[in-house]
Length: 262
Image (cartoon, rainbow, N blue to C red):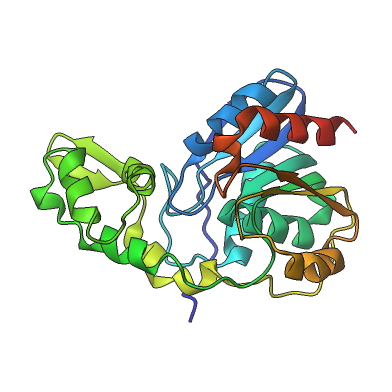
């Protein structure tokens, strides 16, 4: 069951680059705004790019709730604070679900929507081993990232995934700490995997970008995507997996730019 959806007045940590039409970038689970830097830097030559850390991630505030209504409202508050009347929005993975929720519930605030390798469906809880591994790390025994990596390897086999996850560690004078609130994420993880719960539509221009080697967006999802986003189309980046923006950066950025100027 989701924790209380108590409204917070805190704003998401964010970085603004460039000038022009605003576009908001939202990262995925266990990530931070740095994950989309290669996209942000490219777009900043033509757009005002707002990159955010979502709640319980990066340098943003911590909160017990991780449901999409609350996370989309975080974006609304930031957009209002920045006096942005309307913006493009791009989200990857969990960030894509936040972007979809935002567009479906606040369509008047969205120009074009870009969703990277995620669908508006409920997914299996395939991060359970990752969550268990992160919670199991004994930070008192961590003198460097290699120590943490060794502990996490018991739960997570892939070195690249461990490297990504351990970016959440921050070194302080008294030792290592987590920047992300792992416990809050773990306790409300059932909300993170959920499908969109409403019946609204976003009729604005929408682009789904799929990694050719990823199974996050499947043919079975076409019907629900069409129902919620009737003005949507899809692009596939061959040879890319779930981290398509990092694996095929040039191709990803070109697809995004072409869609924005169309």
